[in-house]
Amino acid sequence: MKTDNISELRSHRVWLNADDCDLDDFKRLINRTTSRADYPLASDIQSNVLIYDGDAVRSAAQNPESRKAMLAEWAEAMLTGPGIIVFKKAFPDVAPVDAATKIFFDMIAEQHANNAGVGDHFGKPGANDRIWNAVEKLCLRDPQTFARYYSNEIIALVSEAWLGTSYQITSQLNVVNPGGEAQSVHRDYHMGFQTAKEIERFPVHAHQLSPVMTLQGAVAHCDMPVESGPTLYLPYSQSFTPGYFAWRKPEFKEFFKNNYIQLPLAKGDAVFFNPAMFHAAGTNRTKDIKRMANLLQVSSAYGRAMEAVDRARMSAALYPSLLAMKASGELDAQGTDNAVAACAEGYAFPTNLDRDPPIGGLAPQTQQQLMHKALAESWEPAKFNEGLDKHSWRRLT
Image (cartoon, rainbow, N blue to C red; front, side, top):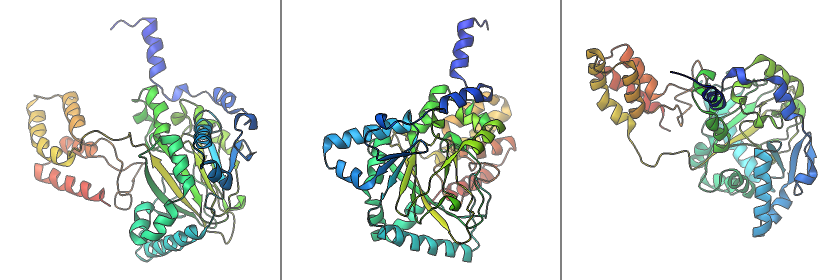
């Protein structure tokens, strides 16, 4: 096919890859200073990070106009500004935090008693403690504590500022134990959990869309001095368009290591940030602080299809026909792939990470990957159905 210059330029604009990551461009992008004049509602700026006073936020939220202005300031701060905001005294009364902490430590003790170790997406498995799906587990274990905790006004306000209404809250409890090592630098969900090869197939506007589909946050469940390893951040790094490739490259990892910022937090403080920001949990250098944070992942209501579809049932019905059509040559490899893509679930999430942990990567096996494996190995339909049932079970809470 003839390719003229405009086609080449357009292709380069739309399709990104690791070769688009220039460290000098990255340095120029993040070499900025956060100005109080741009964010008049902030109470302070520390290491380029905007700090907001929880009491002032709650007061401003009482007036519709000041509430709207405040949420607009946060939205721009996370999109085009430093990418991160901290709320001091996000919980004016830490009693709900303490109550949840006790429940979480009970859950961790039960995990240890049952030898139910859990992994960490970007850290060394077993070094720290983690509770997957902490939001559901807390709600079922103690609904009153859940209500007191998630009635928090600041969590709701900042979620609306970034995602609008009808958002969905999930959380993962993370404890970095004394001596626990730092995570590797990364970006977060969605594209941060996919391989570089996978995200090459997404156009540039999808790379720009991914960060605005999710809000990352953390509530401090204990005082977190710097030596306890609060999260490492690189302000403004969320603005680098090919950043989902960049954080994997050695020169970018080294730059992060030499330029990250780290802020202490007090119990009841909260931090929220654009998930495309380069970040990593820090090393806990203390001997006695179990650094506990409730990691909030708030998702846009728009990340869902219009209709409810039973894709497991569809896959079970389709598989025998695909197997026969592939064997007869009626469908070639590309046609088979297309039919699988229209039928089976191609995304690993949401899932139950206790039952369905990511093994050998950042995401568990998808329904499509299971079907492709079965077709490649010519499984009998009964064997595929058994695998499909196990796959579906692993995803249940």
